[in-house]
Structures are given as structure tokens and as C-alpha cells.
Length: 362
Ligand code: ADP
Image (cartoon, rainbow, N blue to C red; front, side, top):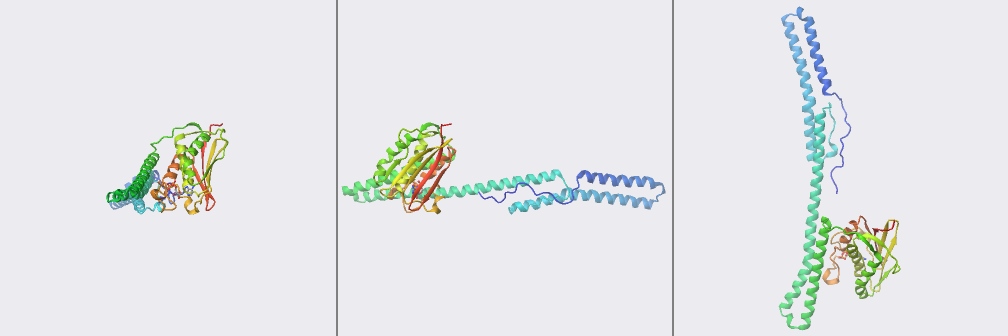
């Protein structure tokens, strides 16, 4: 998040440094000096001279006390006001921290105001950022919900307007309406999952399990879908080799399904998908690779964003595309395992997604 200032400590103080104690000593010394001089000279002084001495003592004391107040209090309060003006204009960096004297309480007040203002500004910036995100999220959600609702609505109204009489058309339209509603169901489920993951409501239930066994299970589940595009699924590890990790099995299964399902969805006919595990010292690397069309560089950083699709024209109900939340959910799940998910891709060559999980091996 961009904030307006990163300065937290005032710049080193410049200028004359005279403490309040030094001023008090100067005032006391001057008054003592004048009174002593007056006592020495008193018997020889005329009335006129006494009035002069009185006037001189008064002026000197007045000037000193006035100057002290002016310098110690009013000038520094003005300095604080000038600082507040700069806060209003968010010019944190230009805040002067010069003090003519060193009035510690005033300096503390100024530092405190500085800190409070900076903290408040950061909070305001963060709230504004969240408000923009919330607004964008709402706009995205309504847009995504609209597509399957309008599609199902269209099919049902066409049926009610007479298409029901033709048995073939009726079945076809009912199937299409059902498919749109299934898409809507997936979207709503994904929305619930992502909002719970973002709120931190979903806790990862970490337990030891074998990744190799999970990989085979996921392949069995997606075999039919891959076969419909003549895509071959390859598990690059011997079937009996064990890759024990400590993670939430159900959630990791969801991640593998998302990644392999994407590789099938966006992959080419007669393509290949490879799933592999590689044991490291403390972590096991999981890799899903395909030889599909690849992802152009400018999209690589954005595919984990909610609702981000490279081909905006692909919608759930017409092309079998997903909710646009699959990778965002996968990223959240991997991060909840204190890991990161990375993508590398080359147009025309294919895409590779990787993440690590803590292994049980010491
Ligand atoms: P969707 O629900 O649209 O699949 P995802 O969050 O799973 O959403 O993916 C975001 C986008 O990333 C997809 O719309 C697709 O454009 C791109 N993408 C993801 N995986 C692949 C892949 N293996 N090959 C090519 N493009 C991919």
C-alpha cells in the first residue's frame, strides 16, 4: 500500500539549545546582581536614581521572562501549529523539528502529534484502499452472478413462451438451464470459500498423508474430463513411492484439482499434463506442468487475482470456464500452509505451477 510518508523520526535538531534551567539561572543571576548593586549603592542613591534602578530592574526582568515564554512556549506552539498545517497537506517529510530552545514537554507533544497524525493517515489510506477493493469486489460478484442467472432465465422463458411443446428443444433448453445453475452453484460455493479463507475462518487441519496416493485419487477423478479432450495425465513418480507431507489433505486436494482442471480446461486437444513430487530436506515440491497454449507474460502476475481471466470472453456456461476464483482460492490455501505458489509459462510451450509443502522427513 502506498502511504504518503515513511518518515517516523524527526530530523536532528539544529539551532541554539538553551534549556529552561539556563534561562532560570540567567534571570536569577540578573535579579541578584541588580539587588546586590542596589544594596551597595543604596545609601548614596537619590530618589531619581532609585526610580531609574527600579525601572531598569523591571525592564530587564520583564524582557527576560517575556523572552523565555515567547521562546519556550509560544514560538514552539506556533511551530506545532505550522506542523499541523503540514499534516493537513500530508507533507510529513517537510515537518520542521527545529527548536530554538529545548523544551522537552513541548518536543514530546510535537512528537506525539506527529506519530498520531501519521498513524491516522495510514489508517485512512488503508480504509480507502479496502473501500475501493470492496467496491470492485461487489461489481465483479454482481457481474459474475448475472451471467448464469440471465442464461437460465432466458432458457426458462423461451420454454414458457412455447418451446416446451417441442420435446427435443425442451430437453436441450432444460439441460442448458441446469448447466447455468450448476455454474451458479460453483460460483457461490467458491465465493463462500474465498471469503472464509480471507476472513481466516477456515483453519487448515494439518495431518500427515501421502501425496502420491492423493495424486492418483485426483487423476482418477479427472480422467474422464481429460479423456474428453484426449489429454493424457502423467504421474511422474513410481506408484508405491511415498511422499509424506504435513498438510490439510482435503484443501491440498482442492488445489491439485484446480490446477489440473485448469490444465485440462485451457489445454489443447491431445495434450499432456504431468504431476510430480520432489522431496527436499524439509519440503516437498509439487509441480503441475502442461503443454497447453501457455500464458502471456503480462498476465502471469495477475492470474491469482479474484475473477481474473485472460480471455474475458470465456464464460462459465458457454465454454466450461471456471468461476475465475480457482487460482485465488489455491493461492490462499497454499499460503495458509506458510508456502507460496509460483507460475512460469511460455506461450506455445505450456504452463508450470509449483508449490511446496512441509515434509515429514527430518
Ligand atoms: P478460471 O475459473 O477462469 O479457470 P482461475 O483462477 O482458475 O480461473 O484461472 C485464472 C485464469 O488463468 C484462467 O481464466 C486462465 O485464463 C488462466 N490459466 C490458469 N491456468 C492455466 C493453464 N494451465 N494454462 C493456460 N491458462 C491458464
